[in-house]
Length: 270
Image (cartoon, rainbow, N blue to C red; front, top):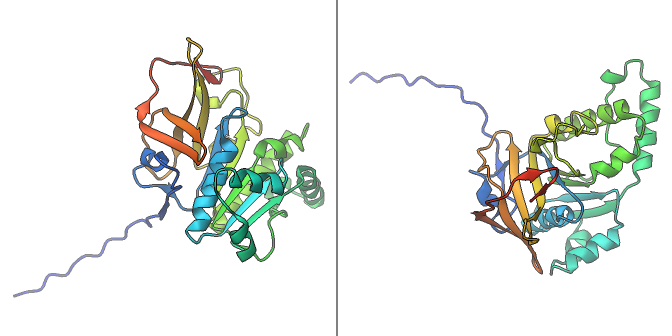
């Protein structure tokens, strides 16, 4: 018998997929979020963006991951108290060093970037490192709360903000860190509102994924929360707006409860 030579094929590298372990949410993906992705968490005020990210942090550290939660708004003690109100106790993981919750000053970021740019001959080619990352800590997941606060520190300097965002996304990609970046928007660009201009212009394009949280108001005055995975590079997603609840144990998503009889108008669904 003549042995046949098996031709070896080169396959593209298959990226590891991660799960959030938020009840019901992961069923909106075929497998999960590709590791190393940068994901925008969009929504208006009070829709649960911070809870969503804190819950991701909690579920990750319970499973042995290192997590950095960067706040540009609330102080550390408020976020820790917020976690405890849902029955999550981060203190043990903070002491172990697997969780860092730290408040940063967006103006410090702006000044550092400005100093680096002023020394560069070609601004678009300069490598800007995220100077606010803690030293000697290599997180698996980074959560930034929020890009909106960082953008406010670049008021009148949109070009510099865009450069900084490009370098930040590039840095996260280089380190293979999975990141979730909160952005407060009254009118997400995808809902068809032509008058809205994105701050920083390229953020939605730079991101690998977009998850949108909605405050749904029906014509009869009833109000509900909803969530949608709008975009996720390298992963099959189920495109639908589904019901979401904020319970005393955190967020709960109902992947089979599609909200019907509503339409997008501005940001709210009415």
